[in-house]
Length: 135
Length: 286
Image (cartoon, rainbow over all chains, first blue to last red; front, side):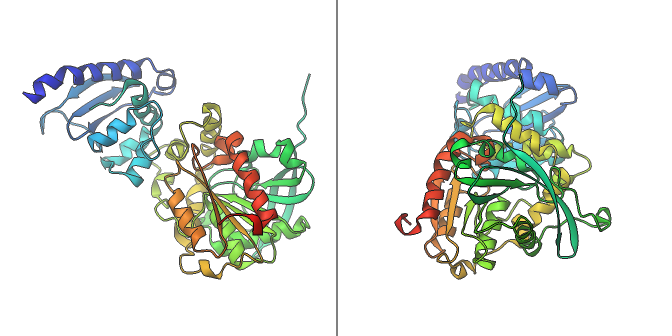
């Protein structure tokens, strides 16, 4: 099964992402009220990331349609996320604003919650440059 | 031991369209005036490294002002501005720049603006070509829709952080982290003006049908845009320059929407090239 053979790497990515976020100096310095849940949708993979007071407390890997609630979604093709997951992303793949304005990324759901947490979300997504692509 | 910068600051009071403004500007250097406009929702510290650039200030009098409602330039002195929504127009913006240049008694100034200042540079070239020896439109275009957003002032979000982090992705990852964070810091200070500035940038500014009216014999135009700019892309600026007779365009690799603030060391290389183009338009490639 495709899902079964790919699951360990997805789980490993989720653990590395959580570790990177929970030890990141910027997020830990400014994340006292960084609390939200969001879907990172990479088409071939998806994750619901739960953050409470600046700490990633859970990541659901490839959740079913109604398995895990989330407040907003960041959706893009697998290829776009792979571009995000490089140390120095190419132009337009260097942030959620640029990829939303100029590529296939979409910001959906409670965008207000995204804006309320924008500083730390921006940093968290940039951690992909270190952790690598989620897909 | 202290080290005092040669950059000095002054206030000057001017009247524009019946509004009285006490304008703050920084300056350094001698030679042809180079009048510098910061980006929307920001202030003149974006030009901090240009103001102390010894090579450029040896030949140019660099003047970087704060547009009213930004930095140390207050909103108008003679109106109850707090009872009105701020929505910058091309007309008022252009009139302000002319009034400031008049008040400073500048002779044959160059104008350089970035982002909404780059768009203003095009407006000046179109409307007042005899007032400037040339304009440098940094990150400018004929039309730049899409950024007049309510998020910049939404009361349920932290406007300072939304403005600062909402513009973060406009910078190139190659730019020095400390300079990107200074730019972020400036943006955390300007949320009340940012949206109103963007009324000009994304709504009132539209030169798509007027570029052929720009007379570069009277006012040469050089445009410079960074490859990481997602708002005004190099394609947007190249298209714009291409529709201006003898308009020049320089693409800047590994730089974003705030060249002078995010990476002056890289920007200055292209700026020197652009200044040479203005000095000798006939020799410059299209």
